[in-house]
Image 1 (cartoon, one colour):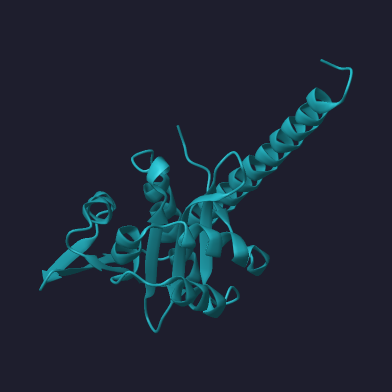
Image 2 (cartoon, rainbow, N blue to C red; image 1 turned 60 degrees about the vertical axis):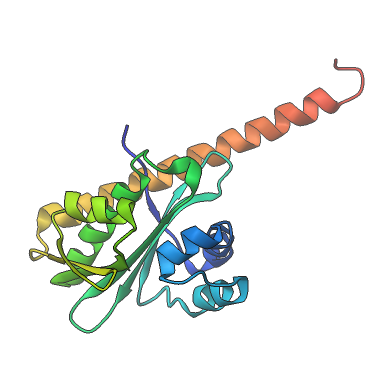
Length: 193
């Protein structure tokens, strides 16, 4: 099953904040290198420049972010951070976000994708290896690098299709949520039991 990813806009900053705040201390430590307190998470999200960077998400059936990736543009490379809620791990959400970020960075004209993580973060190390990233480990921390080929027609089409699938997935989940809400309201209406 392919996992649909969608690029988030600045209007979805609160959804990203809720997602990151839902991570427990250990998951925050694995994502950020330290267990950031709530206010530090809020500050991090408030500083994301949605015009310069890209943020991608995988939404669950309740339209909450189950997984998210922040692709930050830097001088000569792009840095990626990924988080996946526990119930979604092992289902391909992280891999889908990594692949989506890889293509997006290519299409920006970036030649190198970079991820920094703790060496004990087995899930991220596995994803990095699957994506063909070169991993350098020192003192319990790892840097993963992937040299990106130049953008081409195929990478632009891949990005366009991925976004359209993500939008369709989100719209479908929104419609299902509306149907559930209407059905719930009809069940609660007196005399309709």
